[in-house]
Image 1 (cartoon, rainbow, N blue to C red):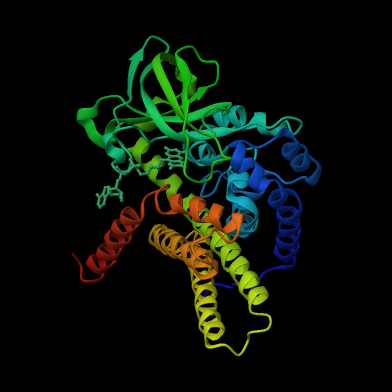
Image 2: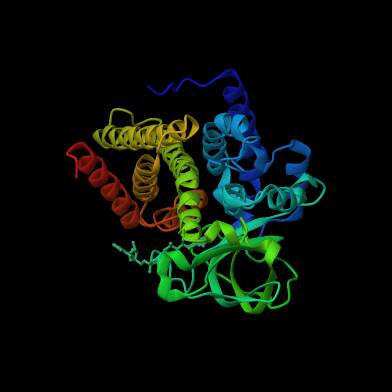
Length: 403
Ligand SMILES: Cc1cc2nc3c(=O)[nH]c(=O)nc-3n(C[C@H](O)[C@H](O)[C@H](O)COP(=O)(O)OP(=O)(O)OC[C@H]3O[C@@H](n4cnc5c(N)ncnc54)[C@H](O)[C@@H]3O)c2cc1C
């Protein structure tokens, strides 16, 4: 059975990150949302604090020998970290320097040289560096197999053409993991995965998206126009893709390892909203504890608290399974689907319970109401998570009855 007791190290990290979120993130949160950007002084605070993406799984699920020990202890810690920092502001967490979603594919199939080369940049703690992950296209979001970005083998490498959209940290990434198809008629088997570095000719940043929530975090369109990428940047090398669907598998495996983190972020925001609603209601009914209305509100608040805890349990379970190297695709999708959906509802209820005559009761509640919306969308929408869960269930049933 999963051991959900926190170790001393986890307790220390959680307390430290909560302090950081409270003192360095929350005070900057509303202004960053308004400016749709995070000011450089935050990165100085990050540098002073020693917080890094190392707390996030740079290589979760990696098959690399050198990574094994670290990963074993990391995903669970990362989930704790993800909740605490998102409790402060999820945009800030997403904007922490590091490889981000680009990390897992490089770890999964990158050669030792590629891992060394692309991760080396993050050793420079003086300046923030970012990686990114570019799969989504204007015409292909959930339908990952339908990507239209083309890669054509040419002398010494590949030529990439296409557009990627909604790429987290896209406009400031030092490198981007890009998924392209060698031949769309091959479907998933035609997918190839590249690392494209900033400054590569033919690679440019299009518009920065103006979003409803998570506004302080950079999300951009990336354009590849006859962009030549050398052979060394094909993740895993050519042999890796021969007679396999490795490119597609990499895209999916990334999600299995990062969905628990996204679920934890949703838990962090929902917890923040539930706590804030409770504070406001306790304040407002200081002298009205006996009122039936107060009791009804308390019941609603307790219900929100229970759902936050349930979402956290599912999230921890999926992290636990990953840490002990058990299949966790179903658990990760369940956690993501449940946490995403409940968090959206909880943020809405927090706003509704505290609003007086339709006025916004608190700028944070209004912001979290906007921020949380995307947790039902990115890293696979709620419907897609349910499809994954259903598929895994049928596989299990099929295996049991010998289908
Ligand atoms: C803030 C933000 C950051 C993002 N960051 C990244 C990033 O870093 N890298 C990246 O590659 N992408 C990123 N994305 C893109 C994100 O992953 C996609 O938006 C998401 O996968 C959904 O794709 P879509 O928007 O094209 O919606 P669609 O796939 O067009 O879906 C539209 C609706 O149809 C439903 N639907 C689609 N297919 C099915 C089906 N088969 N069965 C049932 N229902 C279905 C969906 O659930 C959804 O409700 C980001 C998006 C946002 C908003």
